[in-house]
Amino acid sequence: MSGHSKWSNIKRKKEKTDSQKAKVFTKIGREIAVAVKEGGGGDPASNSKLKDVIAKAKASNVPNDNIDRIIKKAVGEGNDDNYEAIQYEGYGPSGIAVIVETLTDNRNRTAGDLRHYFDKCGGNLGMTGCVGYLFQRKGVLAIEAEGQDEDKVMEDALEAGAIDFIADGDIYEIQTLPDDFAGIRDDLEAKDYEFVSAEIEQVPDVYNTIEDPELALKMEKLLELLEESDDVQNIWHNWEQPEEE
Image: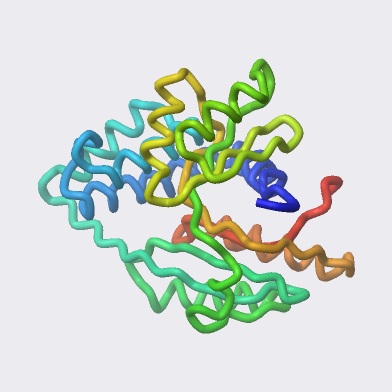
C-alpha cells in the first residue's frame, strides 16, 4: 500500500480499549459465539471462522480461560443467543467515510442508535454501498518492531504470501489477501511471531484529514459513541488522525 499506514489509528483505538477491557471482551465474546454457530462447532481445527476470531481475541489479550468459557457456553444446549451481522455505512463530519460492522439481536434498535450518533455528530448514515467502494478487505497482522529485524520480518512475511509490508514506527504491518490471511498468520505463528492485531479489516484506499478543529472533535465524538455501543463490533474509517490527538 502506498502512502499512510493505518496503524496509528489502530494503536490509538487499542490504547483506548485497553482501559475498557470488559467491553472489549464482551464484544469479542459475541463474535466467538456467532463463529461457533455459523462455523459448525467449537473446534477451531475444523471451524476456520472460529480460529480467526480466537486469533483476534488473543491479539486483544483476552485470556484463554475466557475464550474456552465462551466456546463452551456457545456449544451448550439452551443457548438461544441469536445475533445478526449487519454492516452500516455513512459519512462523518467533513465527509469522512465510515463503515460500522455490528452484531445485533434487534436491527431496528441498532439502526436507530447509529442514525442518532451520526446525526448528533454532524454526519449522516447512508445507504449500503455509499462508502464501501472506498475500502478493500484485507488481512492485517501487526507485530511490535522492538526486538525484531525488519528485513527478516519482511522476508518471512513475503515468503508466506503477504501482499504488502509496512514499517510504521514501532509497528510492522503485514497485509494479506482475505483468503490467504489464516494461512499466513499460521505460518508466521509457527516462526514464533506474536501479533498485537490480527484480523480481516476494511482498509481505505485513501486517507483524508479534517482541517477544522471543531469538526475533528465531532468526528472523535462519533467514534467514541460507536465504540461504546454494545452492538458495534468494528469501526473502519478513512480519517488520518493527527498524532498529537
